[in-house]
Image (cartoon, rainbow, N blue to C red):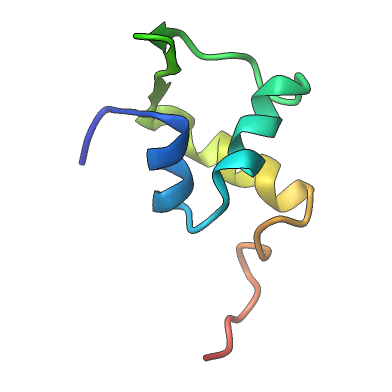
Length: 69
């Protein structure tokens, strides 16, 4: 598991759309991470923060919600 993720990599990992993860940073809901080669370099330690923000917006199911097949 990498220590740093791009916006696209993190969106794929979290089964979300890239634009949704990107929007969390663009609108200031989450602090901008450092950048590497012009891309966001999101540390693995921030994954729970991103998950919570996506859930708060209703873009991911709640942590305790059951997922039906």
